[in-house]
Amino acid sequence: MGNDFLTVGGQVLTLFLLIAVGALCAKTRLLDDKAVKAMANLVLYIATPAVIIKSCIRPFNQALLWDFLIVAAVAAVNHLVLILVAKLVFRDPDERRRRVLKCCTVFSNAGYMAIPLQQAILGDDGVFYCAAYVIVFNVFLWTYGLMEMSGQRRLSPKQILLNPGVIGVAVGLVLFLLPIPVPALLQDAIGHMAVLNTPLPMVIIGYYLIKTNLLTALKDKAGWLCMILRLLGMPLLALAGLLLCGVGGNVLTACMICISTPAATACTMFSTRYDLDTGLSVNLVSVSTLLSVLTIPTMVAIANYLGSIL
Image 1 (tube, rainbow, N blue to C red):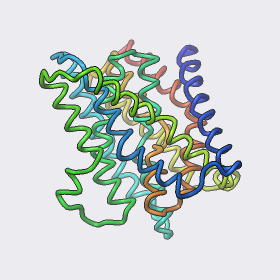
Image 2 (cartoon, rainbow, N blue to C red):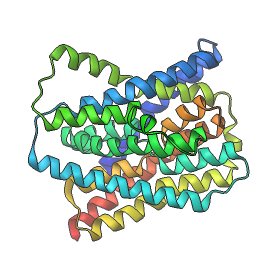
Image 3 (cartoon, rainbow, N blue to C red):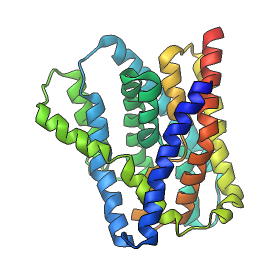
Image 4 (cartoon, rainbow, N blue to C red):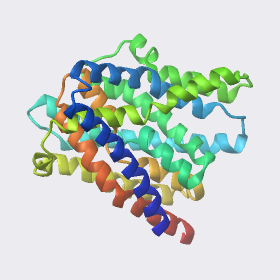
């Protein structure tokens, strides 16, 4: 458990250093609102799909495929349960707040934070399992998340199929399932774009963080409820379900890392794009990320312990 705390704590502190860079850019006016919105679009439309595609460029393996499908199924059930819970719990009369609260409850930082944690704890296999979770995450993000944050009641087939998240999923799965060689030059280019998936969102959060009042965030009861559900409620419920279904080993650990991560920075990207309560989303992402220094290693340690004795 001590090693988990050190590993997760180091990763989270690294993210907060990147957030500090964004805050510095806001203070010194190196960035403005227009530039930050452009950065958010770059993350949503380029960097995130690149991460998915990069993680799927690997030799096909039957056993890995089975574990991959298990993680994907877990991710789907997890998102469906959270969508239902968020709908029942959050009824804030302010629509701009309600949408942010619901999405910060449903969507975890599986793409930006879980991938480096998986690499540190489980290695390449952990990253591959995380890719399954991130794929499902992106399908929900670009369907339910897009509808919730944009206010659209319905999405056309074109919007569902031809969006960056789903396109990234489709390309990645084709590259994994079929023996299609990817030139090293192209792999390098995809890798370079994927690297942007962590620093840019953190810089954006730092930019907005400097404009918000964290004291107000700590007094927000609805915000605390959102973070409790995200960091403790759903991870504990998911752990019970996974153990009852006989899931163990690295698959259990990988699932718990993804499910236990804090509120998704993608919520801030969407709230920025659709002019919602960006301050609230920044507060929820920042505070939940800080709290995750304690909650993620705790969830992972409990999962590993129970998985070893049951």
